[in-house]
Amino acid sequence: MASDAMLEKMQLRQSYRNFWHTDLTNAVAADLPWCCLSLWCGPCVSYMLRRRALYNDMSRYVCCAGYMPCSGKCGESQCPEVCLATEVFCCFGNSVASTRFLLQDEFNIQTTQCDNCIIAFMFFLQQLACICSLVACIVGNSELSEVANIISCMSNLVYWTVCSCMQTQHKVEMDKRDGTLNTMSAPPMQQMSRW
Image 1: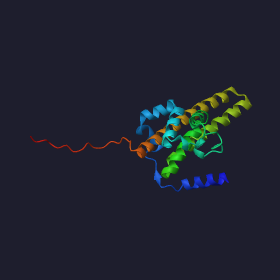
Image 2: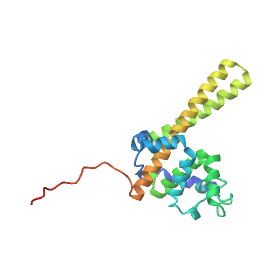
Image 3: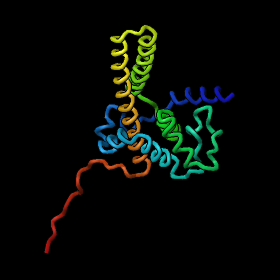
Image 4: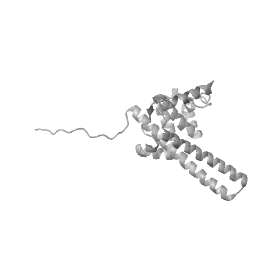
């Protein structure tokens, strides 16, 4: 029953017509300081963004924004701040994705094909790293183990970079929503004063 509802939501998300204010490839340029902050303090930024996505109303908080099987079963109503902190530190990837889904559903935002490719590449590298590590462990070959470590390092680098860009994308979208987006515009026309 719940899985049917989630499947319907995923299918509905494909028909959304709006786009992110900035895509993943331009997120760094859109807000470099925030992107750096989210790279070095990912869970803290995820916490701040989820609160902001909920309009700072923690009574609306549900674990993983209601998108995971554990949602609603973690005591969120009694201690939402503690539950959110636990979510962002223990399930960081899910917390970033859940905030993304929350914003997409609120504003009818679709994910671009380019963003989908970036996310798919991130997942592919993670799976490749896992498979290489398992094969290296089973075979016991030190060279294969070193290759597995390199792929794992690359996978981690791509993962943290993509999560950082996603969180920057979320922040820019909420800046747009809240009317605090700092866009470049021409200065107003000046008039000469006459004395």
